[in-house]
Length: 361
Image (cartoon, rainbow, N blue to C red; front, side):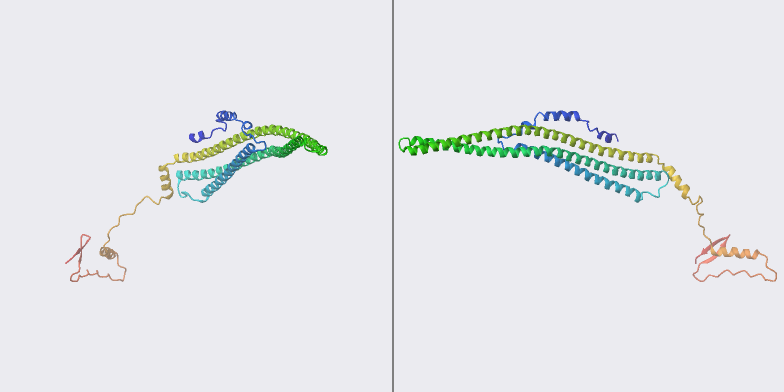
C-alpha cells in the first residue's frame, strides 16, 4: 500500500526542474533560427508549422489512447461486477470463512465499480485534451491566415519588382545602344539620319527614366512589405513558441495526472483487498468446524457390534419357550422336534452348553 501511494505524486512534483530545463531551452528562440536568405522562401515558417502540426497530432494520439484505456477500464469493471454477482465462489462455506468470502465478492464488485468510475474520469481527461487542442488550433489559425496573406503579398510584390528590374535593365541596354549608334554615325550619315538617331536616343532615355522610377517604386514597396513580413514573422515565431511551451507543459501535466490516476486506482484496489485480508484474519478453523458439527450432526452413538446368530440355536430357544408356556385347555402338548440326522459326509450338529458345534467327518 505504501509503495502504491508513493507512486502518485502531485503533478507539480518536479515542476522546478522542468521549468529550469524549459528555461534553458528558451535560450534558443524560434525567432532567431528560422530565417532564410531567399526572400520568398518559407522554409523556416513551414518547419515551425510542421512541428506544431506534429505536436497537435501527438496530443490527438494521447487523447485517443486515453479513450481506449477508458474503454478497457469500463469493460474490466463490468466483467468484475458480472463475475462477482453471477459466479458462485464457495457458496456452501460456513461461518467465518463464509463471511470472508462474502467480503471478498463485495470488494471485487467495489473494485469493478471503481474501474467504471476511472473510465469516466479518463474520458473527461480526454475531452479536456481535445478542448485544449482545438483551442490552440483556433488561435493559431488567426496567425496562419495573417502570415499566409503577408507571404502572398510579399511574393507578388517581389515578382513585380523582379519584372520592373528586368525592364529597367533592358531600357538601360537600349539607351546604351542608342548612344553608341549616335557616336558611330557622327560623320557617316546625313543630318536627317542623325536627327532620327537623336530622337531614338531621347526616347530610350525617357523610357529608361520611366522604368527606373517604376523599378525604384517597386523596390520601395517590396522593402516595406519585407519589413512588415519580418516583424510579423518574429511575432508569429514568438506566438508559436509560446504555444509550443504551453502544449508541452499541458501534455506533460496531463500524462503525469494520468499515471497518478492509475496509481490511485491501484491504491483503491489494494484498500479493497486489505478489507478481504482483515476478514480472513478473523477466520477461525475451530469455530468453522464447530459450526459445521452443530448444524449438521446426526447423532453421538455409533452402531453396535455385529454378532453371529446360530439359526438352530434360535430355533431351540424358541421351542423351549413354547414348552414352558401353559397349554391351552383342551389342546394336547406338541411333541419335541427330533434332532435332524446327518447324512454320510455331512457335518454333524450338536449343542454343548448352549454353543452350537459343527463336526466334520
